[in-house]
Length: 236
Image 1: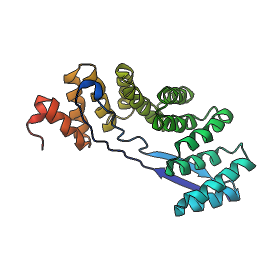
Image 2: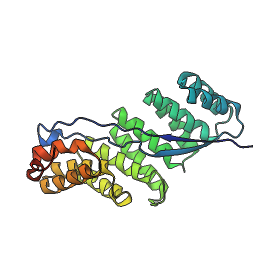
Image 3: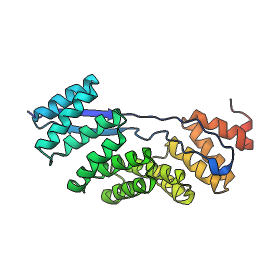
Image 4: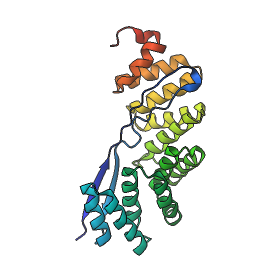
């Protein structure tokens, strides 16, 4: 009987921002991994079974060894790469993630999430051009289909990377896509506001920060009070 393990990964990174001038606007990685749902089917592979047991127990070093063994014995099982990627992320081993999915992307060039995970690792390591390429590939492989579960994250994280490289027009377009897919995504409103602010669209930035605040990002009150006249009254 096939056992199925459903793993939901939630990572919310709430950054503190400082706008000493326009060029120093920082990206808000509010929901980099929000609602990242992956299904794992163990196919009776003992290495995957044991690896997942150690993963659930928080013994990531041991889990890593078993997932690596699973790949050695069957390099064509995508679940082994996905599980290894999760463990490496928990270990903050971004270089390990790149190595894992470099091989995985060659074999499974039709799996957009492999490119997405590689993109996140590249972003963490400051390899922004490589990260943008990975996210772009993930979007292309998805066919830009709105029913692809993680599509909004591909756009969101590429937009974040564009902000980090001060490509604000491209960032704004990506956050537009996120909001079209998820109209209440406060991270996208926050970051689109930053892109607009750097594009000298202060009114648009304040509008987006107001929506981000309304939808749950209380940290944008700082921007509203400091940069937006309408934010100085009625907000606490």
